[in-house]
Length: 421
Image (cartoon, rainbow, N blue to C red):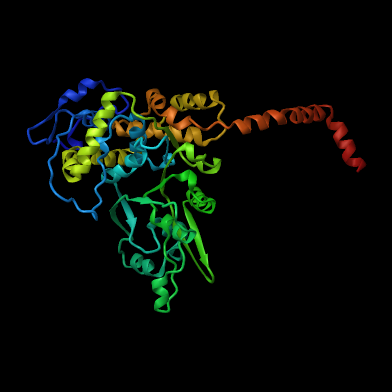
């Protein structure tokens, strides 16, 4: 296959017909052969639509190895797959929330991103010291070990892959934010260990059944998500950790609703329904059966396409800084938000950033109105509050009384009243 840089890119956002699937051929061994793949969206549509080869019995695969279901093997769910890909390209989207009944592939889809995660420059320090910390606060802003490295001209960061960090429902607060390091205490040393929030820095933090989380845990990562860092204090010791994570969550509304505070932190909101077409449901069954019988063989069939998709995601992340949003397109987006009477400014921030990611994925540097149309539903749904609307409506009578009272006073009346006092 040609690499990403050797291909001429086209629009990710264009609607591709099923005829594109005919461009994908399989040889007798089941290997994927692609001709003329031009964009990430086209690759996803072509590979997800092809039939897989039934694999034989290869014996026990082993339980210790992490073998996620291939993302490109997911059947249907186009909006969900697009949202997850855009969140990898642009972390400023604020994450993705998947809402739907059990058994619709929400958790499987998030975990399947493992082989698509792009590269990132990560701190080599236990406390997460970065070069930008020095630029912002000087050498006092980093730990003593990193100060020595910086003075010697040694790098504070190194290349690494984005990781998927899962927050379990039974996690304690110390597990999430961090606490005293027990291993250090054995040697009569005091050190604060990093919690899951610090481990999720520059990674994806995934919370399954997020609507069932303990409130104190929710409050902890709400504060961290808002500021990008948090401070842990245990007695005389304190440490500040970076927590710039891409938040992803899934939930079943039958089991309870999500608090408005945490709902507002999710940029893209997806309603995940079951597959409607009988042919799609049958194909999903066949792929799950093949994966369970031989996960390595299933993953191998999608390995080449997965590698290309990962390269395209990495390239789109690099292009994102050059993507421009014209004032005309931005005003169209804001008009869409206002027409729905959405108060939160995060609505247009998410929608416009998602449109930029959509353009970057197509190797374009200009956002179009079609990009807005594609990302608007997932960016704007579930943002209106019936309670707030009713609250403002009930307050309108008092507001009108205040306006009427103030209009009855002239500047002379106000000045006279003030002097009399």
